[in-house]
Image (cartoon, rainbow, N blue to C red; front, top):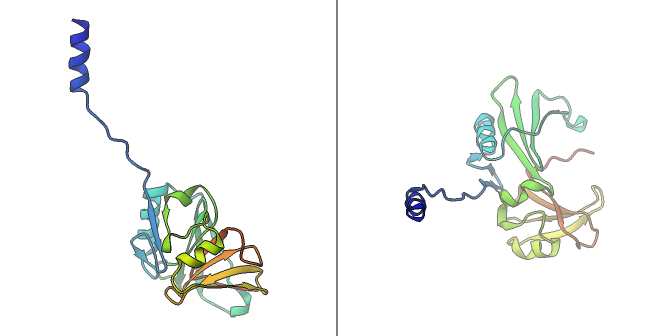
Length: 176
């Protein structure tokens, strides 16, 4: 009788499938389903649904070389993913840029051309269509660009292009 009860209970138990952790797609001009220039509130909701609340939110200081500006920027950081949002003169915030550095979320990010921070610089040069790379003396990184996605920049730290990609930026802003 005990065996029959166990068998009956086993057959009536509900099977719960194991679900994979949620993923987020980053594109040259989008964070998930929100395009650059799209509503920051929608982006925040989508990224928060995947990764939880931001680990940090910080106000960004405008580049002094750019002159006076009424554009305000904030950075929302989810571990190793940073999304920059901007607003002008009190308008609603919009998505401005994103960046990824090595870290725990990388395995759950779908990156452009499948090049992430675990990819070697040399391999990235073969995976990204029409990619070119060279060392930038001013900023001190090996940069990879492509005309297929001119607003993306992959960087590594080694002058000769060896080593891993250490940062990926969409719409990078430089200020000396």
